[in-house]
Length: 296
Image 1 (cartoon, rainbow, N blue to C red):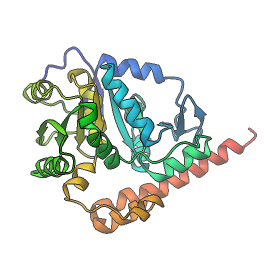
Image 2 (image 1 turned 90 degrees about the vertical axis):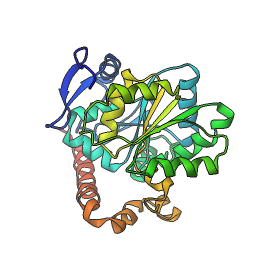
Image 3 (image 1 turned 180 degrees about the vertical axis):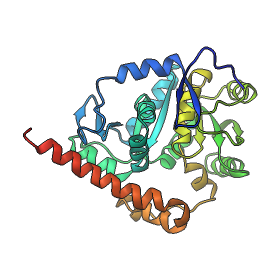
């Protein structure tokens, strides 16, 4: 494993140690004093909407792609968190995860409730930046932009099938490499061999599909160790585009019902996320809104 001596240890989730890079700490400092965790359910400032302390970027797909391609052009190093209601609720359980997500270069509105709240906050241009669609759009533009893509994550055989399908769909896609990781715990650093493999690939974008919030810890912890300008924690896009998991119909996605479709596909694993967390999300929003109306 990589020596962590030059990094500052923090506790990720109560049972794993992560190491925050200087880049990560600088972005935390940049965001301090802006986020008001658990006070206002949303605030409209600096091109984002504060939703229960998580600063969701005021984006649509065109703006997200333009921003990422600009980072690559200028060799700026950032990571991207694809945010849903699940992300917001995970951040309620971990202050350090909230800081990690808020330190991202972009925190895209993947869930429709985040889009609706962003528009209500005055960002009328915001539309859903769905992780799987962001992957398709950046892969589609690969031939024109000349960007190289590395795919890290997925279960056995998933990433291979994913790349086969993507290259069949986008013949100009430049695949820098793939890697299916072993059983890393949340916050655990990759081996030097794997990090060298990613760096040797000369990738411009590293797609990370480990599931939230594990992938969010991963992109933050590995940001300073990887040369690629952009790391994107994209989650279920690996399973969707490989065909391992079915996607919800478009009408369900547009109307904020994708969670119901996914719950019906895997109720034993997802019921807590979608039944309990969605309910808690609505309750917390209601309480925060009520507090903002009180005169004292």
